Amino acid sequence: MRNAGVLLPVFSLPGKYGIGTMGKEAYRFADKLKRAGQSLWQILPLGPTGYGDSPYQSFSTFAGNPYFIDLEAFPEDILKKKDLLAAESGEDPEHIDYGKLYTSRFALLYQVYQVDNYLGLEQRYPDFSAFCREQEDWLWDYGLFMALKEAHDGAPWYDWEPELRNRREEALSQSREKLGDRIRFYCWLQYHFEKQWKALKDYVNSRGIRLIGDLPIYVALDSADAWAHPELFQMDESRRPSWVAGVPPDAFSATGQLWGNPVYDWDRHRQQGYGWWIRRIRRMLQLVDVMRIDHFRGFESYYCVPAGDETAERGVWKKGPGMELFRALRQQLGELPIIAEDLGFLTDAVRQLLSDSGYPGMKVLEFAFNAKEESDYLPHRWPKNCVAYTGTHDNQTLKAWFEELSEEDRAFALDYLGLLGRSPGEWNEYAIRMAFASGADTVIVPFQDWKGLGREARINEPSTVGGNWSWRMQPEAFDEELIEKMRHLTRLYGRQAPSQRAEKA
Image (cartoon, rainbow, N blue to C red; front, side, top):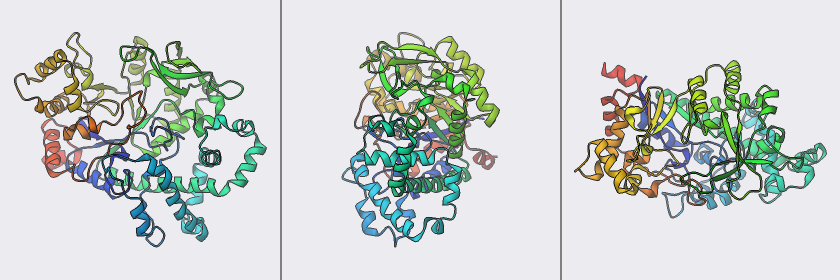
C-alpha cells in the first residue's frame, strides 16, 4: 500500500525545556501528521547519549534517553514552577545546549526521584517492580553501569580498575551495595521513560500513524552492552577491542571512516542461537512499529580495522551472519517489519541478502543527480518495494544540497525535474512531488525539506564532532499552510492514510 511519512527526531520537537520530549508537543505533532494525511513518523535511535551526543553511540541499546522524559508529567507539588523555569531553553531555542542538559537535567530528575523514593516507589508506582522484572535481562546491568560511570567521573568502563572492568563478582556486589541508590535512580528513569513512551506510542497509533524506529547495527564501545557481554565482541583478554568498525577509503574520504565500535564475534552469537539479537529486536518492537536497521550491508560482510589504528586504511572485510541471523529472528519473533539501510557501495552478495530477506531497501533522491553516470537513485529506477527519501539525517537539507551542487549536476537535476529556466526556489516542492509520484511504496520526507530550510537545519554531518544532533523545529513551523500542502500532495499521489481514503470515498 502506498503511504508517506515525516522524519523528525524526538529531540527536534519544539518545547520549553531545552530538548524535544514525550510531552504535549509530541502529541500535537502526531495530531498534525494525521491532519496532513501522513501514516508514518520516523525517528532516530532512542538510547541515552554520551560524548558527542550521537544517538548512534548510546550507553545502551535497550534503554531510553532520560532527556526525553516530560517534566510536566510530574506533580506540581514535587517539581515546582521554579524548577521548570530553570530547565527552560537557553538563548538559542533552535538548537539544543547539551552541556546545560548534562549538568542540570539529571540533578532535577533526581530531586523528583528522592521524593518518590521517600514516599515509597512501589506504593507510588505499583507496576515499578513488575517493570524491573520484565526488563531485568538488561536493566540492572545498565543501572550499575551508569552508577559506576558517575563514580569514575564519566570515565569509560575499559579504563576502570581491573576488578570492575572484568566484572569480578565480589567487586560488583560491593558496588551494588555502595551505589544502590544511584542504580535504583537509573532504573526509575527507565520506568518513567517506558511509561511515557508507551502512552505516546499508543496515542500516535490511535491517530493511524506507525512509528519507524532506528536500530544501529553496532553498539558503542563505552556501553552497558559491551561491558556486560564482552564475549559477544571481538575483544582480547584485557577486554580491549581487537578490531573496531569503520568504512574503507572512498571518494568521500581518502583515509576512510573510523567509527570505533566493537565488532561482533559472530561465531559466539551463532553458538548462542543469536539470543542477544533476539532480545534486542524484541525490545525494539516494544518501542516502535517498524525498524530501520542501519548499515544493513554489515550483516553480509563487515569492514573492521585493527584497534589502535588512527585511520581506516588498514581494514579488512570479514563475513557476517547473512540470512542465518534473520532466519533465527523470524523463527522466534515472526515476520519482522524491517527497513534495510542499504546505501553506499553494494556488492552482488549484499544485493542477494536484501533480495533473500524481502525487506525494502532505501532510495535517496539527493544521491540521484550525477551528470556523468546514470544512478540507481533516479526515481524512474526505484522499485516498488523500497522506502524513498528526499534526504536522511546524515544528508544536507534539500535546499542547501541543491545550492551546493556542481553547476553540471545542478543543470542535470533541473532538467530531470523539468525546471530549466524556472526559479531554483521551486526545487524543494518539485523534488518532493517527484518522490511522491514515484512507484516506491513508501516515501519519507524530513520535516526540514517540507519547510525548505537551509544548512542551519542539518541534523548531522558524518565524521564531525560538535554542532550535530541539535536542530529543533519551532512551534509555529508546522502551520496550517504546510498541513494543507502535505495533505494535498499526499492525496494527489495516492499516499493518504487509510482513514482519509475512506473519507474521500
